[in-house]
Amino acid sequence: MFIHLGENTVITDKKIIGVFDMDTSTVNKATRDYLSAAEKNKKVEYVNFDLPKSFIVTDEKIYISPINTSTINKRSK
Image (cartoon, rainbow, N blue to C red):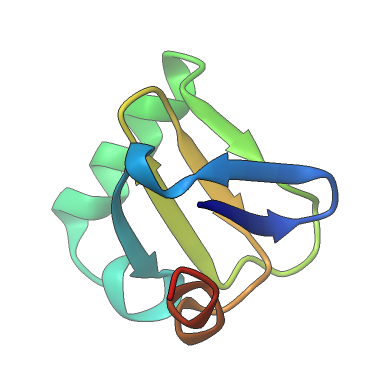
């Protein structure tokens, strides 16, 4: 199944490792460091530049999305 992450970004659900809330997850320094390292290695793709609400970790890259985690989870069912 394909999941729409916003704008023109659609990925297959088989690639998703995790869907995380941006507000609660980035409180932890380890998560911020992980996202910073991924961005430096060009593994981060911004779906658009609206206020980010979630990030989706896949086997290839990390997507920063303006769609909240509950909506993404509903789309996966």
